[in-house]
Image 1: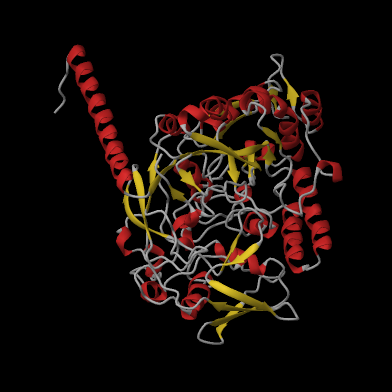
Image 2: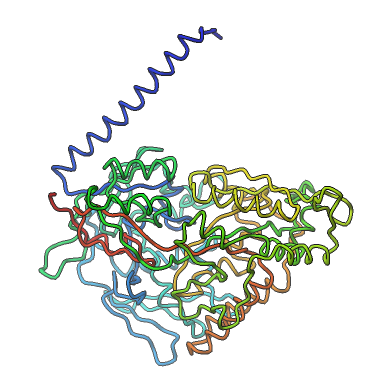
Length: 596
């Protein structure tokens, strides 16, 4: 029944609703603050709900597994060196084809069940290498040009051996993947649903009762309230101890608030609701400028960790495929533009990155030109020959004219057939920094006659368009990075699950017909295979230098800026070691809170 409400009463009801919402939220925060006085906990934040509690299907960052799960080895967040985790040691054979791990004695799952070699074998052989389970992790385990997989076998009560078909330089680092509990998940892997798929595919989704999740990391997920918060509780069966032999972690609980935007995150930190800001990424430049003046009064410190790993980029959809009904993924007219190298290069020259860094990043960033993080020994700098695209709108126009584009009397860019160059660009609306960047990119491209329809949308929708629907035109996004280039193999392998600029069909998604892969895409994929086969670091650097030169020539990703890594942390939280490699979570087990 539709009821017309007089204007005055309607606004009164809206006002009451807002007051109630604010009161409820304040009450909720007050509860956690009161509990914090009694329980050793920190309160942090994330911008959106996580998509899964099953590590095999994770494709985003951040994620719950940062706090709940570990692998055989891990990366030191300060040095990037590989360190023992669930495995206490390992041996590498002379021919570099076998790695034998010895597990720590007495390992347990969060439910008290022993964690054994059988769990390791189950995780790799029955899950990650199982062709019936569509996990992107399998891309990282493909070895050589034929994409063969390693084998794994038990060689003792605490010893497990991995064998590769040929030497594979990044293999030790790859084996940091999370170990899964066989006693909980085995039945779901070997039992099919009504459609003939393993029940594992629908196991441990976000609708799972957190109490049913069994983990091996410092914390276990105690509760999850959609769109509100995650609460992590200390895992009493965690293996690690401090230098005095006391069990870790020191924190009893982590409360992760889900907030709707970076603006809200900033407000909550300044009001005292959050203990960290930027801990899972970096402070926004405007937050740094504001908070730096408030450190003493606000009882917090801003930690800096150098330039961030990872990339920030704009990319065009280069997929020329179509759906089964013949519908093209991208308008064929626009697809011709996007697949013209000179068009992409023109866009790169037209973006004023210096202005972007000065105005949006407030000087707290450097120009970015490579998919490989600057911290990596395989990074190729511009001084070493990496191509760059300094702001040059005239050069951009010349490239467009050479490619057959032209300008109409109103100086609007049109193609050879007279079609106005106009396309959609999206990014995740929750990230206000990206929204500001997108606004400038739109303005810069307008200066060379392109009309960009910029529409920020929710992160979940962006991911769905990239991974499943594939019906996007231009996206501004980011990828996490690190020191090992092969960690990005699923991005650069043309058949990889994250080859987003020209994504192939994924299991469970509508098939793509007629997709074409360019020769330069194939060459990058081939070089990544070669780079993983080469054990000599100097020779590996030469190989990965070629990949960076090809990417900068063909620009599947148009890189923007590399932000400086910064986080604001309350003084009550001790032992936080914030770095660009590990952010604030890599040593979470050692962190503690003190009374202030």
